Length: 275
Image (cartoon, rainbow, N blue to C red):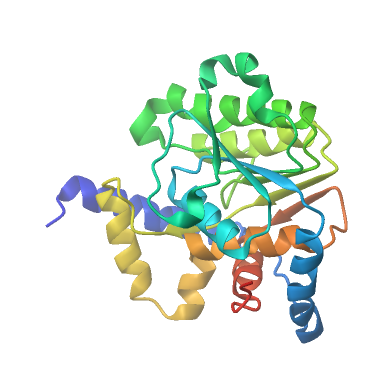
């Protein structure tokens, strides 16, 4: 039975989600017409024919794991590279050709070669203040992300995708949201050809890492009507599919910000999209 600390954490998570909704960071939705949805398989096939390569940062986290799994299942890239602080172990045959680059994020300038030659980049790096402390949180969620983006840009990356957070705002009174907003803005200054920012609500997943507060929050959202829960939260698998569905669609502007509503719409569009 979770104790008072866990209950308090859950309360914070729920209140935080409600604050995000009040800030209207569910964001503009993506209204996909039936014709656009039906075009997605063709867009995927066209994308495969371009033989692009991808780098994924943060593949050990829940969102990164879901993204890697979906990427391999859809067979979108002939070359997939993971960049992280340790080598990950995979048992499934589908992962056998995944390239892994182990780096020291404190000395990323020594690992520039790991960031060379990737057309698309996905950044799912992130930690929590509770786990890393305020200084450690800033170090990971801003400094590591920004330096990785800089090296990816120098290495030839054209389309950079960043998993941020609902409510991200440089003027926020909350450290997490302030840092997320600052990171978004500073990556934008790098001027990627295309820069996609994803601002999900509370991420729903079954973490290997114990976070009782999030467990209680998931139970709370599970008790809500679907229309309410989807406005405040999103499964990591839906985020992964949204990122890939958005990637294969033509970009209409250099920077795009997709809130929770857009993530749900894109992540659920043509859910049968499998090669």
